[in-house]
Length: 426
Image (tube, rainbow, N blue to C red; front, side, top):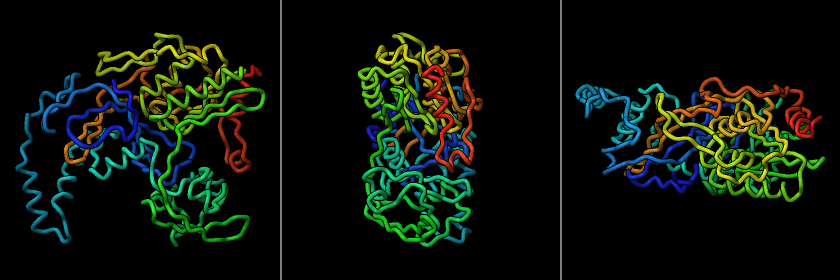
């Protein structure tokens, strides 16, 4: 299995590349990197993440061989395009508007994929595939801030990233964004705001901001932003706090650094925060889980139909084994985040606190084509160590704790407080 995660190390350049993927689903905590590529999953705007793996693609992009076999052997070897061509001719003769050949071909490819009815199977145009790779690499162009909604449903800045264009321009946490380039944000979704604020490096966006009742315009020049997938620190009472925003190509390295730091400082316990984590690289999920689990401990099974394709087990880097641990999850915790939470719960290595997770239990594969496009296709399901598939069901925490609008407004985090109390045995 390739170790590259959801990153631009997966070159979209030819049809000899097949990458196994895990894609997220879930709503998170209404927090978005406003410059980040956002793709739709199951109707919810979230960054799509990848798990690389085995698979074989042979030839020039027209012949694909998957070692897992197919459930669609009844389909013809080639489609009859007679009726498709009839629609094409009718469009060409009658449509009042300009169409291009590439636009129509992309529409055909997208339509084939949509016919599956699977929200996790997608066709990416070359441009979308490039955005996909940039996203999964954790590098993107924008202003470098996170957006959310306050208790009054205002669009607000949750926090600018340190050193980002937003930070340098003076954008601050809790600023209300009332306009984006002159357009009112009233009734604007966070997704729409994300799409309006992000953009190419070197371009500008003007935000009208309300701060302490005063209105001002802030113009920000977009730039390339790199966001680490992991942050960590030691809290009061010597509790280690490890937050994973997504399981990317830097997650394993950064999580190992955090674990070593916690061990060196003899922390009393660890809070692993996976809230709003849409998922990502399977290898990273296995590595993070392995920090708490003995070598060989089952982390998940991957199945195609009723057949187990592969079993993933802990790799032996159990620096945090035996430490009291609480894992924070919510309805934005999906995919690789759920793999980690489920593995630690089922192996009695951690207590889960928060709200039920998203419920995304399928595996996708990325097929790269010579023209730069790509197909993301569901090829299997994953199962927790206890044998459950969480698709559409999620994982219920051991202790359910909600965050109210008043909590958010007052800067309170009862879920995190409950996790700290749990690891301290209070």
